[in-house]
Amino acid sequence: QVSLVESGGDSVQAGGSLRLSCATSESPVSSYCITWFRQAPGKERERVAAVDSRTSTTYYADSVKGRFAISGDNAKNTLSLQMNSLEPEDTAMYYCAAGPAGGPARYCSPNYWGQGTQVTVSS
Image (cartoon, rainbow, N blue to C red; front, side, top):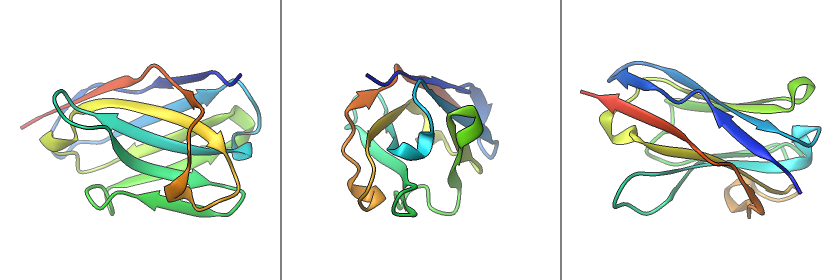
């Protein structure tokens, strides 16, 4: 059983930045394929970004390419999502999820989920 805890969500103005963190109970974080999802009220869950350290692959949704960056810190058992140039459309609950590593990051299949952290971007 892997425990995931997200943090870093906040309310910011459009154009601002936030850094979300996902702390895992297992080490190293590179043992897993980690995905960030988001879900806004009334909308379907969206796969935002993912990383599989075993295959050295990453994935970014078209809506966040060039603005978001995913990175890991094995020493701290954390994975971060740096979000720049935030837009009101980025407002959502953000979740990190972990699944088996070893394939393309865009196809990560999570087995474990965090509770989420809220990001609100005002215009």
